[in-house]
Length: 222
Image (cartoon, rainbow, N blue to C red; front, side):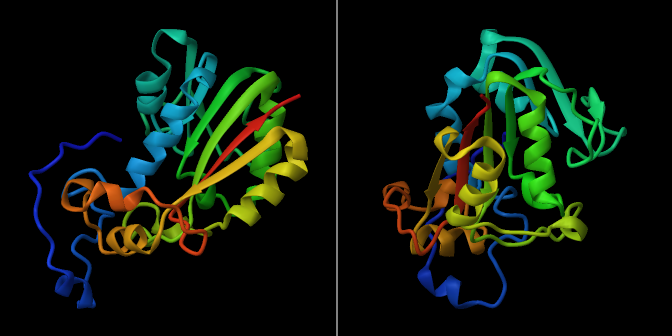
């Protein structure tokens, strides 16, 4: 989800004492949200996996950005047929929504937490991948909850330990790599809806396992 970056605004730390956030929209209305900085770094590090027959949820923006000409067939999954980009419609936790052994790569950014039966969804992801196929998944850790379209089904936030256990049960321990991003500065900035252009980017880089803002999973089907 691209967003035009606004000019840098210096935030007074006193603003963080407010009971109201700078933005109730994760920071999208101010620029690029902090969590998207982490998500895009994860995808950039694993962009070679985005190739062949690819499925992304919601739209194909990240697949196009990081897969480019390596993608031969692009599908988009959405829970609603109203989405004009959707080539597959349905709840991915339900058997039969995703074709079996069909995809080389699945790209799910900030989506899995909207599915109540997450383990079932992960099992269906594994089923949908060809041998050697890769799932690139990000989920929220410390996060605001959407007050708009997705608030009614915002079921979960995950720790790295929870994500690891869930994916290892479906893919096998040797086939799952879990990483996370965040620290108290990043978490505070994100909770208040500050945009990337408004924070000190170098302070987002150190990782503190007590404050995971984004949890990332790379899982390989065998």
